[in-house]
Length: 431
Image (tube, rainbow, N blue to C red; front, side, top):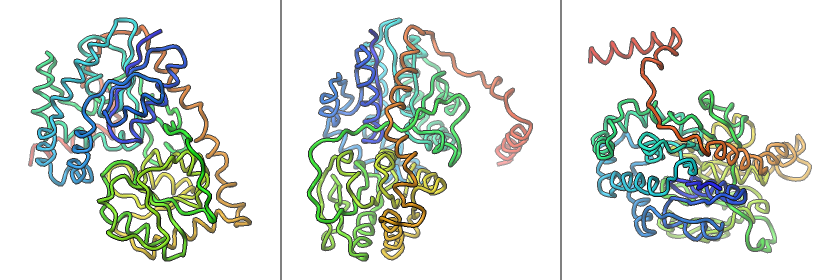
């Protein structure tokens, strides 16, 4: 039996897949510890896993509220992002997480499974102690946005990170893109077809498939007519108009809707007739029985909708959502609108077409029949087993992590990439 330390940050789509992988690892006889926000304590306890909280529930909500406007476009106010980090003690939290990992580390008996891009503490522990680390990406955007994120870490947050690294006797990071992809084991929680529908993940990354973190609970409501589900996820990185546009679109086509939102401040003061609000709902139970879902483009929501063969309309804005939406549309399994096209009429038109596609006798055999193979794939437990097996393969592979040599990276560049890099260097010198 090994100790599997799972480290993750964020909202449901970032945390619940780790809890599901943790359940699989525990079933294989390992001691599993989930290191994440206090807000998830009940979910982790229900899964029968140990919880190592990194904050308080109040602090988590406060940080979500504080981070909202910066997360939508961090480059719009870089100094504001730095102030956010310092105001919420995120550099101190990083140092605390390094200490937590090292306190639980037993040579040859411990593996850390950490969320990609936020698993910096795990990489630091690997550099200091040789802790085996698997980095897990929950959305392709975590790779797509690496150049931007690396620039933000270096030029905006650099001094804060430098201080933490020096506190632990490590040299500051100068190439964040290389550092954040330095773990030999990197797992992607999405399938090959989703990867191929956009910019693919780097070579060597294992595409495990979607991991559904939620579970069915309770009973299905007795609806006379299946409603449209409206959800913007569990976070607060959401455009102010999202719920208003979605609710009005349902009213325009005369469909009842179930609006699920735990942050009422995002909702309009009054909802249209026929729209019922609840703060939460078990999507694993509800999703297969709704007529369609209008959502923000979060990876957990779209994966659950796919597994239920539920027609999707995405109002995608910010962070990974537009990239997720484009991949679904290219694969022919959903439609979406960027924020500049969010109108009641356009959203209602897409929703009406999505509902028509799922109606009995629809052209092409109907949406649910057409995506049946993808639905079965999304609902499969194979992805969880693949992720667990790769984590298990790291047991006993302790070795101090060394940072990639920049010269080795240059040697692997194609002639075209070298030419482009040289041009960028000349432009930077002239500037």
